[in-house]
Image 1: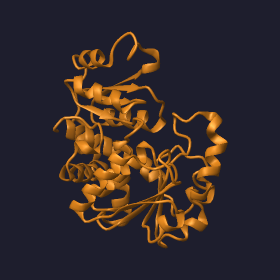
Image 2 (image 1 turned 90 degrees about the vertical axis):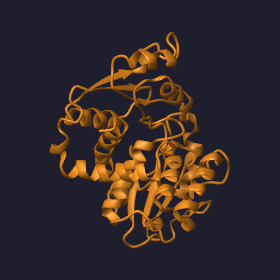
Image 3 (image 1 turned 60 degrees about the vertical axis):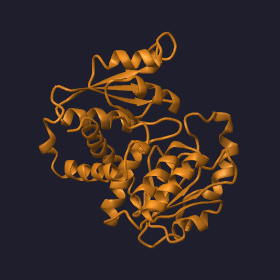
Image 4 (image 1 turned 30 degrees about the vertical axis):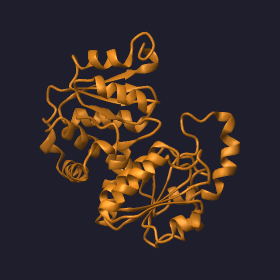
Length: 307
């Protein structure tokens, strides 16, 4: 069993993982020996503070061991194929986490591994982040079903795609507010899958090109970087002009519900996708969200290893 995207989970499994995360967070001592004698291999093609520290800390807290391996220092995909890497690593470790540029490479890794593989981010999906987001929303709002999340900004990215899948699976409404155009909107196959999920859970999926319309009646306002890792620096100024109408500021937050919370998966740049007043304000839960990566990833590892 792998977690290449949230499509690998049933609604029941996703709910069980969130519930297990709550238990792990409340009583961590109960899980101190769950990974005793087990080894996690962490493959990094993209850097990350939260991903490395949370996975390594989580594995250690459960009695296991984690190995950090930077792909930039390796022959992966060059001298040695991804397929051979997966087969070799499976002889040494019990579970693999990978943070890669391309979803196709993640799929190849999973297809050839004999141990569970976790997608810790690719260009298309970021499932671990969204499980943490759902736990955070449930903690703050007391439920998931019937909650409305508004996402603002660059929407042709891994976070938006995974939010569409995750929200629709648990019965949350999601409205994506972004500039018009294929380059900025979520990919069609993800929208279609999210809408299919929504039909089953009774939720709504909307894509709009107006920020104010997106946040109307929202319980959660969410944004992410305008400059993903694959975006060239020379595109920065042009992208700022395109996305500035979707910046989450105090005026835009006031259009959501009075008790709406603000989320950003981090890292964040104040003055770009959101203002400092918002991310550092009373409605922001970004550091609770970051903490929950630790608990939900532990639950994901236990689920994949059937613990």
